[in-house]
Image (cartoon, rainbow over all chains, first blue to last red; front, top):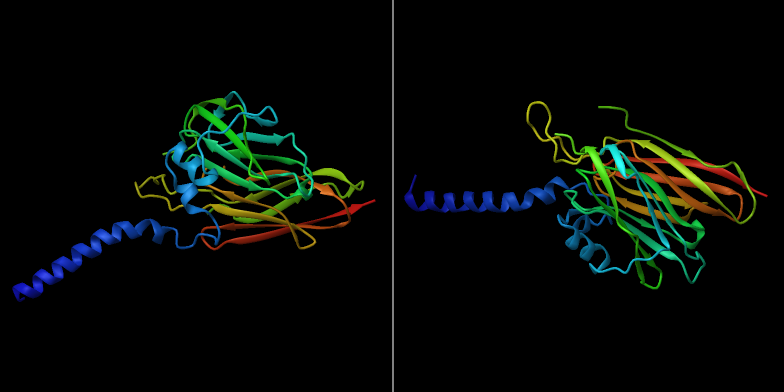
Length: 164
Length: 109
């Protein structure tokens, strides 16, 4: 092989390798459901996840946002969490979204729930995974953009929910 | 592969007009994160439900975006104000092209 050609090819190969590693995440997610906010869910630390999802990292606490989770969870793979917001759900004044975070999970944003006034109540219950003993927090957003945070709640996890 | 899909919705069949009823749902999905390894040390690909949407008689009611932090075989409960008789439909979609829909009817008196 000619030296020049060889050099060209090796440059090409290394270029492919370096871009390849950068491409991997997007390739792995080629099948993302349209509209699913990959950036918010990919954030690795709480501040970044909050910034990407709600645009700020400081949210005033409100007694209206009730977050219920067990204080001790034997199984971190299925921790029941309930969020219930005391707030009107009328056409011009309602909770339009509730974001749920686990501070030190590999990706802290666990879920984003978008409501309409027809829900009648900004309430949900689901089960989440927790890697270790950690804080869970919920942030509710009104249709006018006002943010209200729950009191963060600590869940002591005996067996982490991320296996391995 | 464990069971996949098989979505279920439970909600009251009857309600008074204006009553806020609870909708409970369940679907089978592994909800794997893509961070775990199998016994051979190979990464198990991420396989999880990313979106859940609910409509009432075709009109959007609510929707959720889920991360891999939602537990396997996800349970979800939420509420709905029953203003008229109709059909609630929920659709779950995962990152591997899976899509499942379930329906439940309610009669409002």
